[in-house]
Image 1: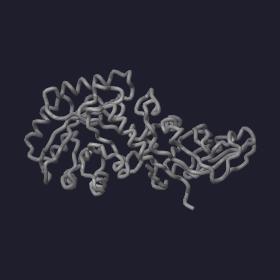
Image 2: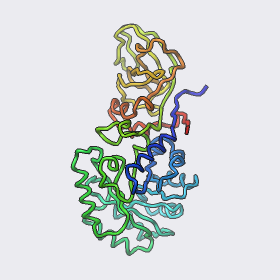
Image 3: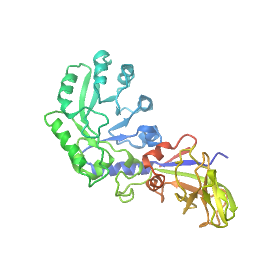
Image 4: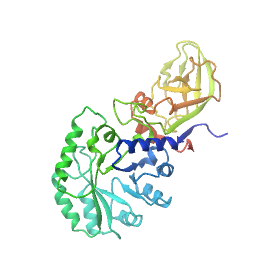
Length: 358
């Protein structure tokens, strides 16, 4: 029998969440963000589940090439562009869009023109202060691009720093900076990520770029995924491989940090940080055992977690344990572990067996 750690990916949930995007932004085209192996859900499988997406957003050339070689012919956008002139033959050969965010990329295009015209997305830094051209440099940058024969279509984009907080006025300020920088320019525009397209209607321009909401995580600080009508695409599960009777005073796991307050049953489940479960999830982080809530105790190990089974004295070896998914939101688990859903979804790795269902 294979190790029981499994990730069940509900492709119907992905499609449902995509339709939520379409309902929120009916007049926009959709670039589905499937970078980082589809946020840990499987790059090609996620792409196949989203036939209505107008484009896919990835980061690495490997991801883009994998999509092309799997037969996808729609627009594929490299969200960080290319990292050197030596990337340009692949970018051109596989017909990839590139995001331009610094002058070095334009230098490379001038020095080593690609074999075909590139469709580009010019990233404007309106306040994220991470990547992008300053608003004051946009006009001169576009003039420079206009002198290149290798540029095909040109689109404009930015990224929001605080869109997950609907009461924060930083997003409108970024929007104003974008409008000021682009008011006399032609070209389609893309501003809204998951949070912005749900919370900031004015950002739903020609293209929206949903990421976490496609996978059933909440992009907003004050709303759960369920409140937003989103469904979890991943259910991470495993099984109990041991149920032991421990005595009051027994210390559980590495460091002995958690001590049994009374005689009690303690379960051991086959999952750990070697599989992508967050190592820093503290005692008290919820799990489901046979569909009912329990909590982990002691430190997360590489291959195992321990579970307080006092609420379920009838639990047995082989019983199902759900780490997150249906009835246990990934956002709740992430919050208990001091991180975000993005990180723990992306961390699930190939030691876990993946099952895809419709």
